[in-house]
Amino acid sequence: MNNSIIKKAAEYVRSIQIKADESGHDWHHTERVWLNTKYLATKIECNTELAELGALFHDIADAKFHNGDETIGAALTKEWLENQFYDKEKIDTVVFIVDHVSFRKKYKPNPKTHPELSVVQDADRLDAMGAIGIARAFSYGGYKQRPLYTANFKEASSTIGHFYEKLLTLYKLMNTEPAKELAKERHDFMVSFLEQFQKDILPIKYLG
Image (cartoon, rainbow, N blue to C red; front, side):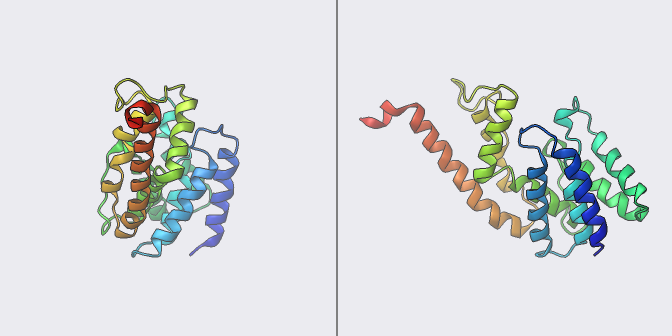
């Protein structure tokens, strides 16, 4: 594996994302996804170098912060890798990962034909689950000035509603078996959190 290109990519992405405000989509998120990817890549057959690059660039320009433009991240990734004189076929693979990893794209990769995308997508989704997923959900909700919850507990416009809209669906969307194993504990933790949250906001019901 070309550790030099990985190191350069990490430094480049960090230099951009370290300036980002804390909305749960900063360098720390990317670093966690990168670490998750490195772990998952040891569990299935894939090109670890391409998977790591895909993880590092996956959120270089999240569409949520660019007026919904889905093309910027892939374009920045391609431009940077071309400037490194990286192999064209490898660039195409990394750009494909960046272009298809997001939840909103609804793209379901086949781990046998797209193993690198499979592990990066799983790694990204793992970071939206469990304790860190809860923290990120409320961080982003605050950033967007969303209410904690509404009268309709599952309404998507609130942070709690986001759990039912997206976060609780992620466990069943995992592509690889190693990710499913990790996701189970995180999913169960979120379920427990929501149960406790409901008790906390409706205490009289439980006090008898």
